Length: 199
Length: 162
Image 1 (cartoon, rainbow over the protein chains, first blue to last red):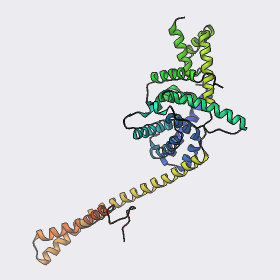
Image 2: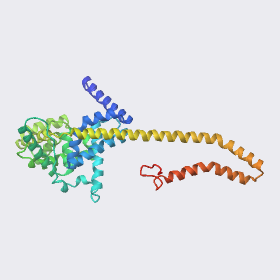
Image 3: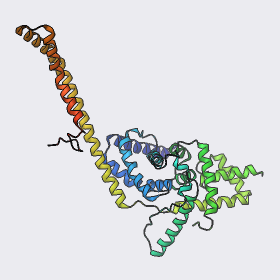
Image 4: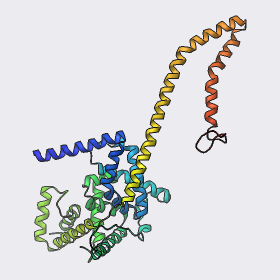
Protein backbone atom coordinates (compact mmCIF):
# COMPACT_ATOMS: atom_id res chain seq x y z
CA UNK A 1 0.00 0.00 0.00
CA UNK A 2 1.48 3.36 -0.97
CA UNK A 3 1.72 6.35 1.36
CA UNK A 4 -1.29 8.18 -0.10
CA UNK A 5 -3.53 5.10 0.19
CA UNK A 6 -2.31 4.47 3.73
CA UNK A 7 -3.02 8.08 4.64
CA UNK A 8 -6.51 7.78 3.17
CA UNK A 9 -7.28 4.53 5.01
CA UNK A 10 -5.94 5.90 8.30
CA UNK A 11 -7.94 9.08 7.81
CA UNK A 12 -11.11 7.11 7.18
CA UNK A 13 -10.49 4.90 10.21
CA UNK A 14 -9.91 7.85 12.48
CA UNK A 15 -13.12 9.45 11.22
CA UNK A 16 -15.20 6.32 11.77
CA UNK A 17 -13.57 5.86 15.20
CA UNK A 18 -14.47 9.45 16.07
CA UNK A 19 -18.06 8.77 14.99
CA UNK A 20 -18.14 5.59 17.10
CA UNK A 21 -16.83 7.47 20.15
CA UNK A 22 -19.36 10.26 19.64
CA UNK A 23 -22.21 7.81 19.28
CA UNK A 24 -21.21 6.06 22.49
CA UNK A 25 -21.35 9.45 24.23
CA UNK A 26 -24.66 10.22 22.45
CA UNK A 27 -23.14 13.51 21.40
CA UNK A 28 -26.04 15.61 20.00
CA UNK A 29 -23.71 17.85 17.96
CA UNK A 30 -22.24 14.84 16.22
CA UNK A 31 -25.73 13.51 15.50
CA UNK A 32 -26.76 16.89 14.05
CA UNK A 33 -23.76 16.76 11.75
CA UNK A 34 -24.43 13.16 10.72
CA UNK A 35 -28.08 13.92 9.98
CA UNK A 36 -26.97 16.82 7.76
CA UNK A 37 -24.31 14.75 6.08
CA UNK A 38 -26.38 11.65 5.32
CA UNK A 39 -29.82 13.24 4.86
CA UNK A 40 -30.09 12.80 1.08
CA UNK A 41 -28.55 9.36 0.86
CA UNK A 42 -30.62 7.94 3.70
CA UNK A 43 -33.88 9.43 2.48
CA UNK A 44 -33.25 8.24 -1.07
CA UNK A 45 -32.49 4.72 0.15
CA UNK A 46 -35.60 4.64 2.34
CA UNK A 47 -37.79 6.08 -0.40
CA UNK A 48 -36.72 3.44 -2.89
CA UNK A 49 -36.89 0.72 -0.27
CA UNK A 50 -40.43 1.51 0.83
CA UNK A 51 -41.77 3.02 -2.40
CA UNK A 52 -43.51 5.70 -0.32
CA UNK A 53 -42.09 9.11 0.35
CA UNK A 54 -44.16 9.76 3.49
CA UNK A 55 -43.32 6.43 5.04
CA UNK A 56 -39.69 7.02 4.14
CA UNK A 57 -39.75 10.36 5.96
CA UNK A 58 -41.20 8.73 9.08
CA UNK A 59 -38.58 6.01 8.91
CA UNK A 60 -35.90 8.63 8.34
CA UNK A 61 -36.67 10.12 11.76
CA UNK A 62 -37.00 6.74 13.42
CA UNK A 63 -33.66 5.66 11.98
CA UNK A 64 -31.87 8.56 13.66
CA UNK A 65 -33.62 7.86 16.95
CA UNK A 66 -32.45 4.27 16.65
CA UNK A 67 -28.93 5.46 15.82
CA UNK A 68 -29.01 7.53 19.01
CA UNK A 69 -30.24 4.59 21.10
CA UNK A 70 -28.02 1.90 19.59
CA UNK A 71 -25.02 4.03 18.65
CA UNK A 72 -22.81 2.03 21.02
CA UNK A 73 -23.22 -0.95 18.67
CA UNK A 74 -21.34 0.80 15.87
CA UNK A 75 -17.76 -0.43 16.08
CA UNK A 76 -16.10 2.27 13.99
CA UNK A 77 -14.24 -0.33 11.93
CA UNK A 78 -16.57 -0.13 8.95
CA UNK A 79 -18.08 2.72 6.97
CA UNK A 80 -20.73 4.52 9.00
CA UNK A 81 -23.05 4.62 5.98
CA UNK A 82 -23.08 0.81 5.81
CA UNK A 83 -24.18 0.57 9.42
CA UNK A 84 -26.69 3.38 8.96
CA UNK A 85 -28.31 1.69 5.97
CA UNK A 86 -28.42 -1.55 7.89
CA UNK A 87 -30.24 0.15 10.80
CA UNK A 88 -32.66 1.79 8.35
CA UNK A 89 -33.29 -1.51 6.62
CA UNK A 90 -34.14 -3.32 9.86
CA UNK A 91 -36.52 -0.55 10.84
CA UNK A 92 -38.19 -0.70 7.44
CA UNK A 93 -38.67 -4.45 7.70
CA UNK A 94 -40.14 -4.04 11.20
CA UNK A 95 -42.48 -1.37 9.90
CA UNK A 96 -43.55 -3.56 6.97
CA UNK A 97 -44.17 -6.47 9.31
CA UNK A 98 -46.42 -4.34 11.50
CA UNK A 99 -48.36 -3.13 8.46
CA UNK A 100 -48.66 -6.55 6.90
CA UNK A 101 -48.24 -9.36 9.43
CA UNK A 102 -49.12 -12.05 6.87
CA UNK A 103 -46.04 -11.33 4.84
CA UNK A 104 -43.02 -11.47 7.11
CA UNK A 105 -40.77 -9.75 4.64
CA UNK A 106 -42.76 -6.92 3.13
CA UNK A 107 -39.70 -5.88 1.20
CA UNK A 108 -40.14 -8.84 -1.07
CA UNK A 109 -43.79 -8.09 -1.81
CA UNK A 110 -43.62 -5.92 -4.83
CA UNK A 111 -47.21 -6.06 -6.02
CA UNK A 112 -48.61 -3.55 -3.57
CA UNK A 113 -45.85 -1.10 -4.35
CA UNK A 114 -46.26 -1.02 -8.09
CA UNK A 115 -48.69 1.85 -7.98
CA UNK A 116 -46.72 3.84 -5.46
CA UNK A 117 -45.27 7.02 -6.87
CA UNK A 118 -41.94 8.27 -5.64
CA UNK A 119 -41.64 11.96 -5.21
CA UNK A 120 -38.17 13.24 -5.90
CA UNK A 121 -37.38 16.76 -4.85
CA UNK A 122 -35.74 18.79 -7.57
CA UNK A 123 -32.86 21.12 -7.03
CA UNK A 124 -32.49 24.55 -8.57
CA UNK A 125 -32.10 25.84 -12.14
CA UNK A 126 -34.59 27.13 -14.68
CA UNK A 127 -38.24 26.14 -14.91
CA UNK A 128 -37.69 24.15 -18.12
CA UNK A 129 -34.74 22.33 -16.66
CA UNK A 130 -36.68 21.58 -13.53
CA UNK A 131 -39.58 20.17 -15.51
CA UNK A 132 -37.29 18.04 -17.69
CA UNK A 133 -35.35 16.88 -14.66
CA UNK A 134 -38.54 16.05 -12.82
CA UNK A 135 -39.96 14.09 -15.75
CA UNK A 136 -36.72 12.20 -16.15
CA UNK A 137 -36.58 11.41 -12.44
CA UNK A 138 -40.21 10.34 -12.41
CA UNK A 139 -39.64 7.97 -15.30
CA UNK A 140 -36.71 6.37 -13.53
CA UNK A 141 -38.58 6.18 -10.25
CA UNK A 142 -41.60 4.65 -11.94
CA UNK A 143 -39.37 2.03 -13.57
CA UNK A 144 -37.66 1.31 -10.26
CA UNK A 145 -40.98 0.74 -8.52
CA UNK A 146 -41.86 -1.83 -11.18
CA UNK A 147 -39.07 -4.19 -10.21
CA UNK A 148 -38.99 -6.32 -7.07
CA UNK A 149 -37.85 -4.55 -3.92
CA UNK A 150 -34.78 -6.72 -3.40
CA UNK A 151 -33.51 -5.90 -6.91
CA UNK A 152 -34.33 -2.23 -6.44
CA UNK A 153 -32.48 -2.16 -3.14
CA UNK A 154 -29.36 -3.75 -4.60
CA UNK A 155 -29.35 -1.33 -7.56
CA UNK A 156 -29.90 1.73 -5.39
CA UNK A 157 -27.16 0.74 -2.94
CA UNK A 158 -24.70 -0.11 -5.70
CA UNK A 159 -25.25 2.57 -8.29
CA UNK A 160 -26.78 5.45 -6.38
CA UNK A 161 -25.13 5.12 -3.00
CA UNK A 162 -21.90 3.69 -4.39
CA UNK A 163 -21.56 0.87 -1.87
CA UNK A 164 -19.25 -2.03 -2.67
CA UNK A 165 -20.67 -5.51 -3.13
CA UNK A 166 -19.36 -6.56 0.29
CA UNK A 167 -20.99 -3.54 1.92
CA UNK A 168 -24.32 -4.32 0.24
CA UNK A 169 -24.06 -7.89 1.49
CA UNK A 170 -23.40 -6.52 4.96
CA UNK A 171 -26.37 -4.13 4.85
CA UNK A 172 -28.84 -6.68 3.50
CA UNK A 173 -27.47 -9.72 5.29
CA UNK A 174 -27.57 -11.63 2.00
CA UNK A 175 -24.69 -13.69 0.58
CA UNK A 176 -22.42 -12.03 -1.99
CA UNK A 177 -23.62 -14.38 -4.74
CA UNK A 178 -27.22 -13.35 -4.10
CA UNK A 179 -26.28 -9.67 -4.34
CA UNK A 180 -24.52 -10.24 -7.66
CA UNK A 181 -27.52 -12.11 -9.01
CA UNK A 182 -29.91 -9.37 -7.79
CA UNK A 183 -27.86 -6.70 -9.54
CA UNK A 184 -27.72 -8.64 -12.79
CA UNK A 185 -31.39 -9.51 -12.82
CA UNK A 186 -32.44 -6.08 -11.60
CA UNK A 187 -30.54 -4.26 -14.33
CA UNK A 188 -31.91 -6.63 -16.96
CA UNK A 189 -35.44 -5.95 -15.73
CA UNK A 190 -34.83 -2.22 -15.57
CA UNK A 191 -33.24 -1.81 -18.98
CA UNK A 192 -36.31 -2.48 -21.15
CA UNK A 193 -38.42 -0.32 -18.82
CA UNK A 194 -36.12 2.65 -19.30
CA UNK A 195 -35.40 2.28 -23.00
CA UNK A 196 -35.54 5.74 -24.55
CA UNK A 197 -35.74 7.41 -21.16
CA UNK A 198 -32.07 7.37 -20.37
CA UNK A 199 -30.21 10.62 -20.10
CA UNK B 1 -17.54 -17.55 -28.14
CA UNK B 2 -20.19 -19.62 -26.46
CA UNK B 3 -23.23 -18.28 -24.60
CA UNK B 4 -21.65 -18.65 -21.14
CA UNK B 5 -18.85 -16.27 -22.03
CA UNK B 6 -21.34 -13.59 -23.05
CA UNK B 7 -23.39 -14.14 -19.93
CA UNK B 8 -20.30 -13.98 -17.77
CA UNK B 9 -19.30 -10.71 -19.43
CA UNK B 10 -22.75 -9.23 -18.86
CA UNK B 11 -22.77 -10.31 -15.24
CA UNK B 12 -19.46 -8.57 -14.72
CA UNK B 13 -20.78 -5.46 -16.45
CA UNK B 14 -23.84 -5.44 -14.21
CA UNK B 15 -21.68 -5.71 -11.09
CA UNK B 16 -19.42 -2.83 -11.96
CA UNK B 17 -21.71 -0.47 -13.83
CA UNK B 18 -18.81 -0.42 -16.31
CA UNK B 19 -16.43 1.47 -14.01
CA UNK B 20 -14.51 -1.73 -13.34
CA UNK B 21 -14.95 -1.52 -9.56
CA UNK B 22 -15.43 -4.88 -7.89
CA UNK B 23 -13.59 -6.91 -10.54
CA UNK B 24 -10.08 -8.27 -10.26
CA UNK B 25 -7.44 -7.08 -12.73
CA UNK B 26 -7.63 -10.41 -14.57
CA UNK B 27 -11.41 -10.20 -14.82
CA UNK B 28 -11.22 -6.63 -16.07
CA UNK B 29 -8.74 -7.44 -18.81
CA UNK B 30 -10.79 -10.52 -19.77
CA UNK B 31 -13.89 -8.34 -19.96
CA UNK B 32 -12.19 -5.66 -22.03
CA UNK B 33 -10.81 -8.26 -24.41
CA UNK B 34 -14.29 -9.70 -24.82
CA UNK B 35 -15.87 -6.30 -25.38
CA UNK B 36 -13.37 -5.54 -28.13
CA UNK B 37 -14.58 -8.61 -29.99
CA UNK B 38 -18.30 -8.77 -29.19
CA UNK B 39 -20.59 -6.10 -30.57
CA UNK B 40 -23.68 -7.28 -28.66
CA UNK B 41 -21.94 -7.24 -25.29
CA UNK B 42 -20.50 -3.81 -26.12
CA UNK B 43 -24.03 -2.58 -26.74
CA UNK B 44 -25.07 -4.15 -23.45
CA UNK B 45 -22.19 -2.36 -21.70
CA UNK B 46 -23.19 0.96 -23.29
CA UNK B 47 -26.82 0.48 -22.27
CA UNK B 48 -25.78 -0.40 -18.72
CA UNK B 49 -23.50 2.63 -18.57
CA UNK B 50 -26.33 4.88 -19.71
CA UNK B 51 -28.70 3.31 -17.22
CA UNK B 52 -26.27 3.77 -14.34
CA UNK B 53 -25.67 7.40 -15.32
CA UNK B 54 -29.44 7.93 -15.42
CA UNK B 55 -29.82 6.41 -11.97
CA UNK B 56 -27.07 8.61 -10.60
CA UNK B 57 -28.64 11.70 -12.12
CA UNK B 58 -31.88 11.40 -10.16
CA UNK B 59 -31.97 14.16 -7.56
CA UNK B 60 -33.61 13.26 -4.27
CA UNK B 61 -33.20 15.78 -1.51
CA UNK B 62 -34.50 15.75 2.04
CA UNK B 63 -36.59 18.81 2.87
CA UNK B 64 -34.80 21.19 5.28
CA UNK B 65 -37.87 21.05 7.54
CA UNK B 66 -37.57 17.27 7.81
CA UNK B 67 -33.91 17.58 8.74
CA UNK B 68 -34.63 20.24 11.36
CA UNK B 69 -37.52 18.21 12.77
CA UNK B 70 -35.35 15.11 12.98
CA UNK B 71 -32.51 16.99 14.66
CA UNK B 72 -34.92 18.45 17.21
CA UNK B 73 -36.45 15.03 17.91
CA UNK B 74 -33.05 13.43 18.29
CA UNK B 75 -31.88 16.15 20.69
CA UNK B 76 -35.06 15.83 22.75
CA UNK B 77 -34.73 12.05 22.85
CA UNK B 78 -31.06 12.34 23.79
CA UNK B 79 -32.03 14.55 26.71
CA UNK B 80 -34.69 12.04 27.84
CA UNK B 81 -32.17 9.22 27.67
CA UNK B 82 -29.67 11.30 29.65
CA UNK B 83 -32.27 12.05 32.33
CA UNK B 84 -33.22 8.39 32.45
CA UNK B 85 -29.58 7.42 32.85
CA UNK B 86 -29.05 10.01 35.59
CA UNK B 87 -32.12 8.69 37.39
CA UNK B 88 -30.77 5.15 37.15
CA UNK B 89 -27.49 6.38 38.64
CA UNK B 90 -29.38 8.03 41.49
CA UNK B 91 -31.32 4.84 42.15
CA UNK B 92 -28.10 2.84 42.06
CA UNK B 93 -26.36 5.20 44.47
CA UNK B 94 -29.42 5.20 46.76
CA UNK B 95 -29.50 1.38 46.76
CA UNK B 96 -25.80 1.24 47.61
CA UNK B 97 -26.31 3.79 50.41
CA UNK B 98 -29.27 1.89 51.83
CA UNK B 99 -27.36 -1.39 51.66
CA UNK B 100 -24.41 0.13 53.49
CA UNK B 101 -26.48 1.79 56.20
CA UNK B 102 -28.54 -1.39 56.70
CA UNK B 103 -25.37 -3.43 57.14
CA UNK B 104 -24.17 -0.98 59.78
CA UNK B 105 -27.43 -0.31 61.63
CA UNK B 106 -29.15 -3.72 61.70
CA UNK B 107 -26.78 -5.29 64.29
CA UNK B 108 -27.09 -2.15 66.43
CA UNK B 109 -30.89 -2.16 66.16
CA UNK B 110 -30.95 -5.86 66.99
CA UNK B 111 -29.07 -5.16 70.22
CA UNK B 112 -31.36 -2.23 71.04
CA UNK B 113 -34.46 -4.41 70.53
CA UNK B 114 -32.93 -7.17 72.65
CA UNK B 115 -32.20 -4.65 75.43
CA UNK B 116 -35.74 -3.18 75.16
CA UNK B 117 -37.23 -6.72 75.28
CA UNK B 118 -35.24 -7.53 78.43
CA UNK B 119 -36.11 -4.18 79.99
CA UNK B 120 -39.85 -4.65 79.27
CA UNK B 121 -39.72 -8.31 80.35
CA UNK B 122 -41.25 -9.72 77.13
CA UNK B 123 -40.33 -13.03 75.53
CA UNK B 124 -37.68 -13.09 72.84
CA UNK B 125 -40.23 -14.06 70.13
CA UNK B 126 -42.13 -10.80 70.82
CA UNK B 127 -39.20 -8.41 70.50
CA UNK B 128 -37.84 -10.40 67.53
CA UNK B 129 -41.22 -10.00 65.76
CA UNK B 130 -41.16 -6.31 66.62
CA UNK B 131 -37.69 -6.06 65.16
CA UNK B 132 -38.86 -7.83 61.95
CA UNK B 133 -41.78 -5.43 61.51
CA UNK B 134 -39.50 -2.45 62.16
CA UNK B 135 -37.07 -3.61 59.47
CA UNK B 136 -39.64 -4.63 56.87
CA UNK B 137 -42.18 -1.80 57.34
CA UNK B 138 -40.36 0.86 55.24
CA UNK B 139 -39.90 -1.58 52.35
CA UNK B 140 -43.58 -2.59 52.55
CA UNK B 141 -44.67 1.05 52.56
CA UNK B 142 -42.52 1.88 49.51
CA UNK B 143 -43.82 -1.20 47.66
CA UNK B 144 -47.43 -0.16 48.28
CA UNK B 145 -46.69 3.39 47.08
CA UNK B 146 -44.97 2.10 43.95
CA UNK B 147 -47.83 -0.27 43.18
CA UNK B 148 -50.29 2.56 43.63
CA UNK B 149 -48.57 4.52 40.85
CA UNK B 150 -50.45 3.96 37.61
CA UNK B 151 -53.70 3.26 39.44
CA UNK B 152 -56.61 5.62 40.11
CA UNK B 153 -54.54 7.22 42.86
CA UNK B 154 -52.29 8.91 40.30
CA UNK B 155 -52.81 10.76 37.02
CA UNK B 156 -51.44 9.67 33.64
CA UNK B 157 -48.04 11.19 34.38
CA UNK B 158 -47.79 9.21 37.62
CA UNK B 159 -48.33 12.22 39.91
CA UNK B 160 -50.51 11.84 42.98
CA UNK B 161 -54.07 13.09 42.62
CA UNK B 162 -55.03 15.67 45.21
